[in-house]
Structure formats: C-alpha cells, structure tokens
Image (tube, rainbow, N blue to C red):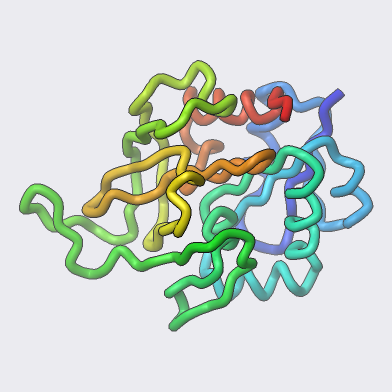
Length: 210
C-alpha cells in the first residue's frame, strides 16, 4: 500500500493532483498540512500555483516549510511548478521574495522582450513544450526524450549546481525544467495536466524506490 500526502497550504487546485495520483495507482492520497499525516505517508507531493509571496506566506502559516525539509530527508518527494521554485534561495517575483533555500539557486523572470527565432514570445509561458532529459532517472522511465509537457509560468529556476539539472526546456531561453537530488525530484511543468506523459511521470513517482 502506497500513501501519498499532497501538501495543502491554500494554493492551487490540489485535488487535480490527488485524482491523478489515484489514477496511476497510489493506494491512498491525502491532501493535508497535518504534520502527523505527512510523516506517516510513504511519499510527499509539494505542489504550487500562484505568486511566490503568497505561497511562502501560506507555507509558513501552516508549517509546510518545515514539512518539506523533513520529508526531503526521509522519503520520496515530488515538487511541482512553484513548489520547485520555492526550493531555491530567492525569487525575483513580487519585487523579491526569499524562498526555502534548500538549493543554491534563484528564480528569474522571463522578461517582457522574450524572443525566439525572431518571434516575440508571450509571457507567461503557457502551453505544451518539449523537455530534454539531461540525466537518466527513475522518473523518466517510459517517457521518451523530448516528450511534451504542459507549462504555466512567468518565472524559471536557475540553479548554481548544474549537476542538479534533470531536464531542460527552450522558451526564449534554455531553462531548467526538472531537478533531481537523492530522493527529491522537482518539475516546472504540471504533470497532472500533461496527459499520458504526465501520468507516466506520476506513476513513476508512486513506484519510485529510492
């Protein structure tokens, strides 16, 4: 039996993540910020939607920041979108916000003059884009190289240690789409909105043996 705790700190539609996890085989999915329930879960999902300032405030208000650090030391953890960005030291969003600082890195704005092949790109980056695997990893199992995933974001992660990078995507700039470290995997895209390949990644997470 595999129990997954989806961290709830008042940001985003967490139930779409929970339903997707149930669909791919998680025995029990709990949407919670109760430390006892998070500790008893086999693995943890750290989602995130919205502005970084609001996300950090919500995390601290219910103690999710501490739960992320604790889970990252003990069990498989998957961070999604702003959840991935929150692992860095600092974000440019909201005139600058300090993040959890789990990894040495920053969160940068795409900018208002983003151009690719002479064409101006819209920000936020919203839609399907290819992800290039930069390492072999259990969460990429049965996901072909350059598969497309669904993104919605105006900011992207820039990590100091390139060894953390597990996937990259091109959108005006070449940015980090996934990072991996021990029992933690984080993605900028939304697997729960990425149809077949997204569900495969979530299935791989549910079955991941660290």
